[in-house]
Amino acid sequence: MKNKFRIISKISLVLIYFVIVAGAIVRMTGSGMGCPDWPKCFGYYIPPTESNQLLFKPDNNYEKGMIILLDNKSFFVAKNDFTSKDSFEAADWEIYSKHDYVSYDPVHTWVEYINRLIGAFSGVPILIFSIISFLYWKENKWIPIISTLTLVGMGFQAWLGKTVVDSNLATYKISMHMVMALIIVAFILYLIFASKTNYKKQAYNHKFYNILTIALILSLIQIILGTQVREFVDEQTKMIGYQKELWLESPTLNFYIHRSTSILVLLLNGYLWYINQSKSLGFNKLKLVIYCVLLEVSTGIMMYYFDFPFLSQPVHLVIASLLFGIQFYILLECLHKKRENKLA
Image (cartoon, rainbow, N blue to C red; front, top):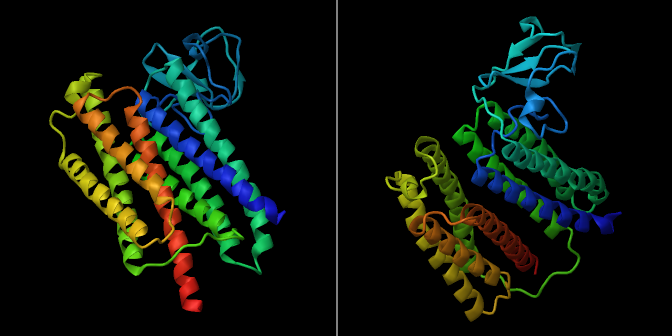
């Protein structure tokens, strides 16, 4: 079973990135409240496809938690299982009070629902590798420990998703949700690296290691700043609608910090590439880092100067997440070489 551990870990990593992609599309389409409740959607395991499915129906079997939209003004949730009578009776229902969002759009509902399905599906390989990981207990106790933390992290991430919905997309909770996704990515990357049996020929350089650490921290800060800029754009969308040219007309300080820091990100990673090439360190994944940084800068320019072209927002977020993951994996490679040098 141990020979399957690394394969399953890689599958889980791909699925987590699919979750990040799906989450980015949810935000781009404004579908975050497509399902007003959690973990079900309007009280159903499979959500409605038409608005008339949310209307009150006489002589209909309702289960506890099912939601109806009454007069397009309020969501009402069934208190218990019951069969409705000829007319709506308030005693059987209570107003859905976790938030005041009242709307139904089938596209938003299904975008959000598919996002949740991908999230739930991604937990399956994590559960499997967490069980298998205990075969490594004598060899490397950190593998089962990190595996268990990953599984717990997925549960915490699901709970965070619930709080995001219950809060009607509170901005700081969305940022927490994103950071937790990156922590899970880091955990899985550690497991993939720690379960390796063959290592590439690479060399440790202290200066390279220090700059790489700074670059990784800076990437994380940039992602957090980026989510805050995105939150500002979301608020602008609610206020002025989809007039994209006005979204960043009067941006906050976070935007200017985020934009200016991107130059530092480019310079730092470019310098890392130079050190790696000039000293023949062998960290070949730095090419991917440079590609990611260039794509990040390009999509950032497109959003600001060309009024948010289609898919530019989710691509910007996903590339940032990939950049973080690649940098973290290179850091693991670097730390491995550092330990080898100490043992030599």
